[in-house]
Length: 84
Image (cartoon, rainbow, N blue to C red; front, side):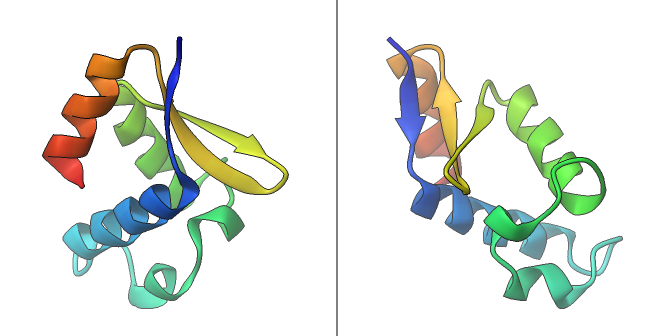
């Protein structure tokens, strides 16, 4: 059974991820914006999703809200402990 991480957790992760990149190639504009409003095809959001995929997570969108999905409970637990 697939495990999920809520939209609120994803928003928190997005803000933290942007903070780590601030001063590199991402300006502060993204900090004021919800991840749900970001284009998934390019820019910081695409890099973010690529990073999430490398961590074993897949971003799914339902009715305009995005959440993370994992294949196993162990992956979800490991991800939460490491990144949230």
